[in-house]
Image (cartoon, rainbow, N blue to C red; front, side):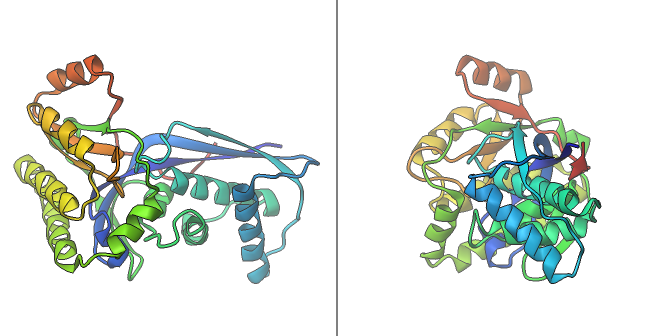
Length: 300
């Protein structure tokens, strides 16, 4: 019998890097998904990441005295999520694989809260100083106001249609640095003042969503980008791309960024949608329409 679970990607609207230090972040799950499937099979898996996840799940079950059957498996990953570009591909893998392994070993489906808690432990395999924000978005779906210090997850938000229909994700390219390397880089600097300014913008973007104020939302994107540039997590090449895109709207890097070459995806609000699309196509720049996901982890 095959067991399959699907989990969505995420986009941080505001709070990159600040969320690692206990500041709030607003994050949205989006409709790009990763599917993880398991079958019982008498083979030994050599993939260290999948073996690590499997072992963590079995330890979790053992520690909680949950009866399970240890058995060999084969796995398959199918993903729509670009890897290493700030959209939470590792979080989606963590969430989908944890859900699948929990059911594979026990024959039971687990609550999202348990999947989320265990996935946060797994995510540290990919990013040692993970805030948990990516996991929360992928597991629960929706638009979330998240705080690491309390693991607070507020899910009452929805991006107004007037804003959502103008949002795009524009690919500046895969950074040379990993998320962990960028988080470590910011951690070597004195950034408290910048993080405090990012926190203010997070609160403002929350208000812009609540009041359906597209002008305020636009201003927050601009200010967020300025602060990410102050953190030095946006490359010269990506700054140039944003400058070229400025005639079509405004945008900011979403995710940990990258400073050597590319900086991952840009969250972009278009004032001229068709002109933006024409430019991206003619420039052969990959992009997606921003479509939130409100379901989170799903059994397939």
